[in-house]
Image (cartoon, rainbow, N blue to C red; front, side, top):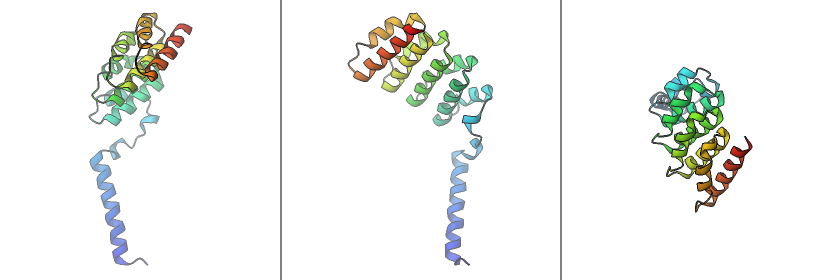
Length: 160
C-alpha cells in the first residue's frame, strides 16, 4: 500500500493536470482536428481566439481541399500570427483556386520569410500565369532561401 504522502502527491498532480487542461480549453478540443471533416466547424475555428486552433483549422481545410473555405483562408493571410498566415497560404495552394492568386501575391510582402515562401509555393501550385511577374521578381531577392523557393514555384507554375 502506498504511503499517504505519496498518494496525496499523486492526487494533487492529477488534480493540477486536469485543472490545466480545463483552463487551456484543451479538454473541449479533445476532438482531434486532424480527424475533423466538417468544413463549417473548421471555418468557425479559423476565427478562434487561440492561434493554434486557427493554424490546425487551416491545415485541415487544405487537406480537405475545401473550396468554400477560400474566402476565409484569404482573410487568414492577414492573421496576427505568422504561423497561421503560413498555414493559410499552404491551404490555399492545396485547394488550388485562382481566386487566391492576388491575395497570395500580396502576401509576398509579408515580413515573415516562412509566409513569403508558403505564398510563393502556393502560387506555383495554383498555376495562375498572372503570378509569373511576381515570382520572377522574388527570384531577385537578397535572401537565398527566397530565391530558391521562387525558382521552384516559378518552374512549378510553368509546368501546370
